Image (cartoon, rainbow, N blue to C red; front, side, top):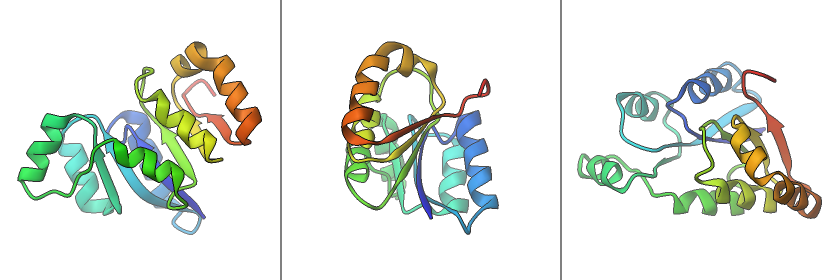
Length: 146
């Protein structure tokens, strides 16, 4: 069973990933979702999918949701999840290189990282390869060109 964390759950690749997870409940379980900021899409995902963990990286948006009674956590939980057996797969469905530390943490703990951004590979390719050799984690490209 793949226990999945989706980073960038409200974007097009994140939403497509969640649809795939919903169609294969015998093989895939959505454990956590992460978005940068508050959106109706994120609230809908929380209410309809009921992931065990929800993460908002923007402090103001997180505070707003917490004030509304929504149980959301900060990005520190991403690192905790990487170090645990609560997830074994991370779908990094966001663009850019911010949060690259989460990818390295996931690889360090032998997680499967499904990567939808080339920027990380272009910017950190050599370091990623070194970490893959050390840890035996896994990177799978998932953008529309693969």
